[in-house]
Image (cartoon, rainbow, N blue to C red; front, side, top):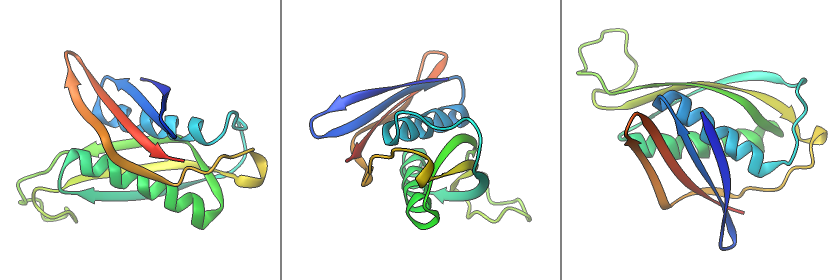
Length: 148
């Protein structure tokens, strides 16, 4: 999986590719981390977990990134070293499934690096502006713009 930061008018964009949707979501989140700080300590900070559900794959990516920004603000940490598992909607027959039928689900974790340990720039929000999330040949592609 790879990501690159792209200049975008007064904002910043992350362009990423990966072999699976799970790896793609993690790559975009890693791009969000890179857009937030030029360097992140390799150690330190506690891992935290989160789950997100949404009605579409694009909404799931948006809600996941929005949640990471929220966690940054509430926990006063920079989420880093992202791990994600994306699950497609099921038919609603799973008795132990907490998601509604037709919902995309994400289970993720990140290492919360204390903001005092990094020179962080504020990313205000994720946007739907120009968002792309699609399969291209044998890999997945995403393009996401963040408001700075």
